[in-house]
Length: 247
Image (cartoon, rainbow, N blue to C red):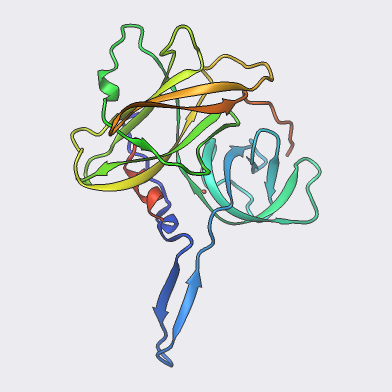
């Protein structure tokens, strides 16, 4: 948990940005366009048979132009830019061609300590940024958050605590330890937490209440949540740049 997670996504720092480059032959210019991500997925490896991507709770994507996952045997959440193609693989909802993919920090939620000692998880402020990637799906809670970043040598520690409210098992708390790096410039990062510790909703949709300490005090936000469904198959701009400084 103390290992710093490197997000090979500096390319995402320039997503949806036109880049101007000089040409040597005619002193003209060429505009390069980096397409925006059009999906947030779970990258799911299949032993001995490549991988597929879970788009939402029920839609699966088969990548026709990638034989193996760039993340090996790890299941991760990722931003992806893809287009649908034909024919559709018989075992998946859609066949797609992937333009690029970029993983985000993916980690398990942490049960609330029995002794109540949460000091190691920190009490530093963050803001939850309104964004389409904020969602509870496929057994994960994915969040875009904002905080202050100063010393580039300091990795911020983020976690999601479960079991914080005995009366509501679906109440969770975002914790942030900046290790003293609490001044600097505003920057956004992405993180996904596995929710496997939460009780099975048995096919029903319930509300997850996310508590967190903001720069203006304690806040909470709710998400619709249904436990992860099994999927039978055979056979990834600035906000992400800061994700390389999370653990």
